[in-house]
Image (cartoon, rainbow, N blue to C red; front, side, top):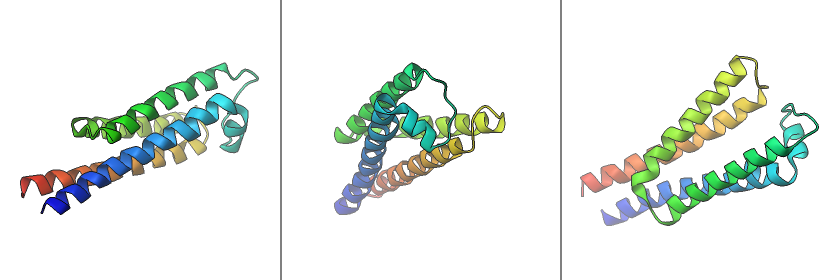
Length: 134
């Protein structure tokens, strides 16, 4: 039974590690270093000045570091908060698209956020269930 608990807890940590690394690399470092390339790749509108994109990249990087550290230090008490944050982000992205304030590419990011949040949630529920049955 302990092996089931460890496997489920490891899956939750892995999901947060992957999401943290993704946030640090793609929107984080990507927007900080090559914002025009990244925004053009996803067909997101931008002007000539990239300072806002770079600041958003910095914030994404910081969020990624927090997600990574939550996983690294197995702060299970925070797992569900990360899930709620990612579902909320996806909801905002979809609302921006529906309102016509963002291109369809933003739905891709919403989908990634929802998929990652669901992965963490399912893994967390498995580990919680394994603990209760132990």
